[in-house]
Image (tube, rainbow, N blue to C red; front, side, top):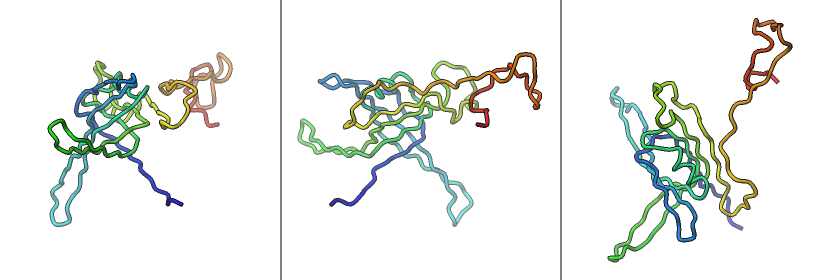
Length: 179
């Protein structure tokens, strides 16, 4: 019996280039893009902060690939979740090549959507869309769709106010209701 193992990657970073959407000969969409993550630390022997950047190759398949190509662009902050995969191949001139990439099955686009003139700090870490792709072995019965928008509910009767001074007929986000 095989021992349990785990191959899971969670990253938040900025795209280093625009996503590239291609199709396999069978017609399956595949999207690749680069992601940069930063790490900052202060060494014990000095008070000077150090920074290091790691670059990751990200791969998305099927519907998630199409959504990544649609929503993401160079510089945009994104959360991705997936697994590490190493591929080996030989070039036409006989050289051996190897690459390690993150094959994602979940993506949340953070930051401002393309073309929205808003200060970056207003959109820092605010999720716009969450997309999850089932494992390739799983049977998909429904299409993958972006997360639903926040719903609003009515409170109380018209013309009255609550104890906190909020008019009772005001729309309140469902997340603000304590039950």
